[in-house]
Image (tube, rainbow, N blue to C red; front, side, top):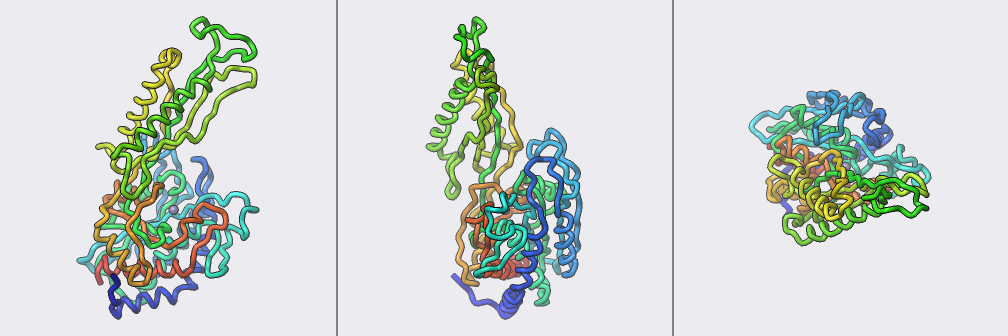
Length: 437
Ligand SMILES: [Zn+2]
């Protein structure tokens, strides 16, 4: 249901729409700064400092108090981030626009990293040079999510120009490392970034994403025994070779049966997310064409649901279930019983969910609907930063942004400028309605 805008709201929407060219220019400026996500943990930084400084300058221009800092490196033993991850040259930004008091505070968040554009020849235009064509802006990160990051900022500038003083504080936060590990938003939460609720400007197509799945990745190594592959081998108990690739079939079979079991279980299914799943993604084994492979390792991508998070707020219960199931299958094999599987787990990216009837959900959906953009309550099957703010920052955070996720991570990524402008106006409206004026 749409409601008529108040005259003050009309003014803000008008100013947001008038800022169309500025919005396009800002997205282009952000796209030109290379903040490609790290592929390996020690990838050197690129233009992160310049990008954050440029956001900081604009935020200071509307009276925000800006905090720009490089988090301490993460240490070993933190299950939620890669070991020894360094933030040198990758500052995080948190800015506060103090309200007049008595209103609810609002976090506006976006990540500054974008996935690699891949080969240049896969693109019709230079991925680091935003091009405006047919009402669409093209370039790496325009919708995931330098577009949303820019429209959140221009929304604040529109409020400032309209002379609107919000009652609650606005916290604008731009972080790194969403695409790689989630370590940036976690560092922001650990730094104290909080609000009564939050909006992450991911490209939701004006939906409100209230949940996502989490991820945890095991590398399961199957042991064999090397030997000449052209020579008949005695039984392994008499010193014969064992083919680790063939033994890996036992692990793959156990994964397949567990996936089937999960499909029928209520706790592995969700009203708006894809079911929990285990997908084998990498297999490595073998050393020589004429040698029995002495080892074979299988990497899996495990997607788990908010309901599967254990009482400690981790995937440990999910891990135990998977380990027990696969080890049991391995134990039925005499060789593997004597040569147990070796398990290594990568960082645990924990999912989160906010209630579908959280008041901010209504606020953003109504604000968008009042501008002719009808969205619904939904979720994203893949993890995103809203989960860290929700789970660890005690800031119930949804994602709400422009259209275009279909081209996220793809070549020729694009976003509709109309959609960006409407997102900007809707966020300005939502901020007024949430924080109070
Ligand atoms: Zn994103």
